[in-house]
View 1 (cartoon, rainbow, N blue to C red):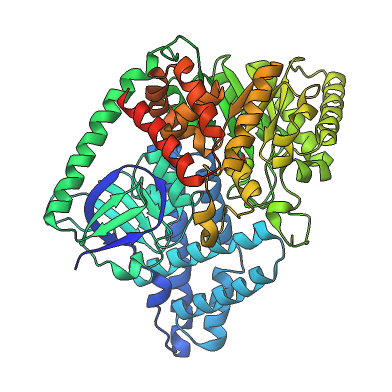
View 2: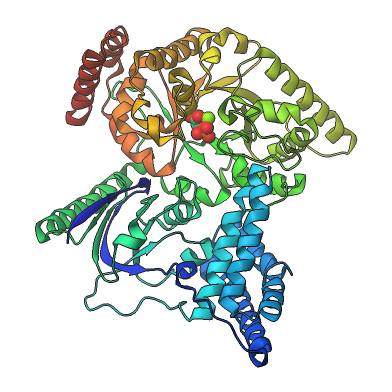
Length: 580
Ligand code: PEP
Ligand code: MG
């Protein structure tokens, strides 16, 4: 039977392959009692399974594949190894075997239930999220016990494998390297889930959050993954397979064609230079940045240093990460954003307070200023790294002048301390503010004497302007970048920058959508920052743009209030951009 499944598009590309179902061991556990004489045998099974997984984790870290893996994945492997040693897991399950005379699998799932109850009682959202890691580890242990940890069997045709799972751990995902994997499909996960991160770094298409993928698909089903659209088509009609084969081939051709643009000067038809910068989440993304020969880093989301760990990164660890990025960019500008924690990227190890509305709560610069010692550590690490290149510091979610003033005071304090300690730093590090709250976009004057540059974060600017939670799919249809209010706030900020000589870049997702390139150019934008994969498509559009022709068209578009007419004008602009 042919059917389509929809999920989140987290890694683009097209895959055509055969499904390999990765078991959900928790659902396959049998429960039975054992005689006294078997108690120690069951405990030995548990310990042997734990030892096998530990050896596997160590091997994964040691292989070439794993040494290419990001620090975040290595940290995750360490965390899993640490949890395996925790007496609350394997030893506690053994204790249950002894006391209740039950089989190892049952004891392990009972112990998991107890641990999960404890996790649910934790108020700290970051620690609570670690429950997923415990579930993944128990899953792996169960698979080992049940003999389910098998690689995909050889296929009847030479199609590659599409891995279908409820969820995948990074270790699972890395373990699939070299096995002719075409893509991933999972029931759970979001854009920053492990599957998504690994798939992007392996440049394999993936659709996550498909909900019922694992239960609806069968082993060996033919599957097409359309990573850009977030769609999986199962057992498609041969004509659809043919169409996707063609699209895949076209995609490869256009990728090759685009790759040729990498060294072309980034100027519009009329000779105006444009800066194309990249958004990165870890130093591991730098490979892609170099591949497209970007002009610099426009946004380094440092909060990703917190992924998969329970403790805070030390000053030295931060310094090393920032230094590596600066060194690798060899003098090109590197904009490092201070921690944007809270909101959807929650982390508050020392608080037990549940925020009633995290998106409007103690997030980003507010969180950092509320924890000055923590913030000072990041500022010190940034300043120490500044000698290795051209550093710019960017503050997220600024709405008040005093937030910048307080940061400037902390920077001054960090400089004093470093000077006293004889540690070097660059004196002239620029400070910028993100414009992602309507208040900031409406009163950009507060930045004139305080900031060296602005960066528009459309992801949040849209969320806060239209009062829709960017995480909540129930209101996702209202997330409209073309709402006149949104466009005017963006255009107003850019124009303010042009008039006052304050450089403005745009680093929200929209910067990487080629459909918006001409619109933003017409508003006066000259710096775009986006996922490295998008750089060349945007470059292709801007090379064909004639700014003198564009500007008046965009000014007219900005005056439109009627959504249908606005969209029509936008589409006309786009059609001209595509056919130019
Ligand atoms: C934004 O809000 O547009 C942005 C770039 O920041 P983030 O997506 O990290 O919130
Ligand atoms: Mg933001």
